[in-house]
Image 1 (cartoon, rainbow, N blue to C red):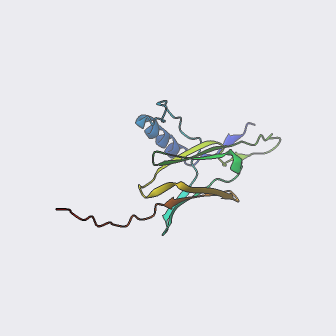
Image 2: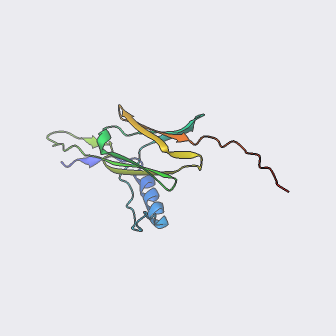
Image 3: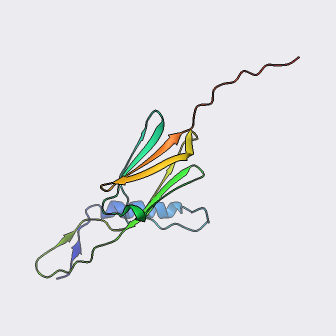
Length: 144
């Protein structure tokens, strides 16, 4: 008996992939970017001095995660290797996601690209983007 993958959300995932494909997202080099095999869930919050993105990326080695900032867009990508399992007896179901992932986030103008840090702990990636210091208004005198 062959192993069957149980995917309760497969139709929604297929629709999402078709919508993304129809939008034809392009990379900076101009080539089409393939959609992700899976999409990690994220929380985004704003604190007083930082923007914080927290992503659930279980089973991914931190050295296999890439975080880039370019032209106000933060990119998180990586890959989760699949486990090879041999089925002997019985019936199995596979629900965990494997393969590459790719997420992009547009950042506000107040984000400081020099103040970005990323930490991974127990399958949770936290990316902190510092805010630029507020520019104080300056009075300009008018000469006559």
